[in-house]
Length: 200
Image (tube, rainbow, N blue to C red; front, side):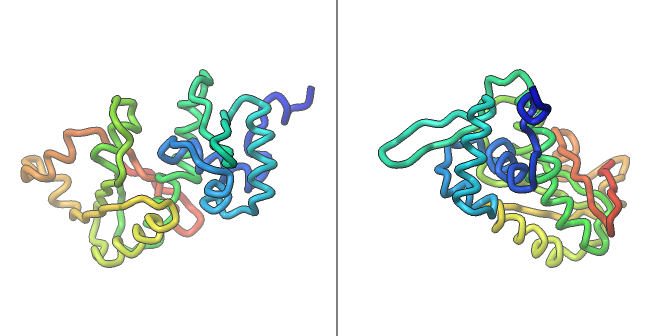
């Protein structure tokens, strides 16, 4: 049996984006048309890749009227690991890292709040928005513009804030900063001019 049949993952950029839409999104059922639109691929390509991924057990589909609904197969033992990889590459964290890496003054960045709690495995409903904290001297307007592009692409609200390094690193942080630091944080890998920088 060939390697793609054993592990039909990341065969192409289109397939990677489709997997990202499904595994790194909200986990909701989507039509093939919605997947194609969000992954920015032709509907015929999405339909073909969905069929291939379903055949190998990565996706589950069902018919509802004339619509074919698709969802990730969360029963796979390695589904959480796949989700983590996709989130950090073509998903939320990867997209934010790519966008924020180009903003001058961004030192490091994290996702916090409900989204980060789901990311680290705490149970609960998947949030409809993403809270981002940027550490550094970046102008809030520039950070908002970068996050807005991600929000529009992924169809999720992104709420960024900027905290300077002195406030973030204080031995006695103000209550708002302390509240953020005490909760789970999902680090964003910043892509800076072809290099990467991990939040710390």
